[in-house]
Length: 186
Image 1 (cartoon, one colour):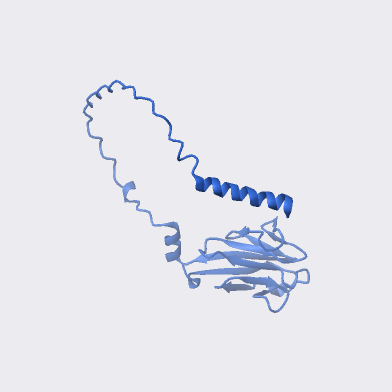
Image 2 (tube, rainbow, N blue to C red):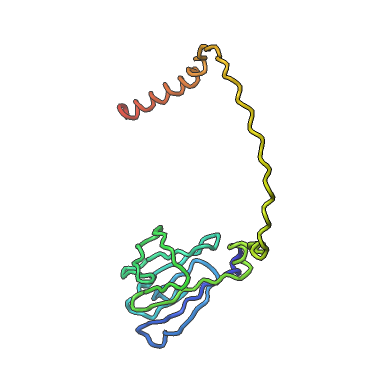
């Protein structure tokens, strides 16, 4: 999948700035910075939004989009509070709403149909159209031969030479010395 095989559309559905309602922007690269500052990919004209409010990132396999709250005022996705800071790993789903300040955005991820069929997988459904084939009559299987009687085996002495390999003993001793030095000497 390549960048041109997907697009994210963000639309404003609520805003204190009435002229911003209905605004829509399409993105084909990630990450997407959203906030009040002019250097953001999507500028929100809302005094309750932080200058650099949130970041959307699509995964390298284009299967999920994460939102990171970078604000001081908080971000909600479909009514759920997004944990603050990088590494929160909050996944945003298709159709979710993003509340930034008093502004509510609608999020949509679209994949080209060729990408969707590759990701979802083409399933051969022709078997659903065929009537089931009648089962062939089963012939009775011959009874299995009886198992031979067990023959007692002589008891052999255990080979202990492999259990106490000098190389392993040496490695263990060195590790113990280093461990004791770190605990008591360091």
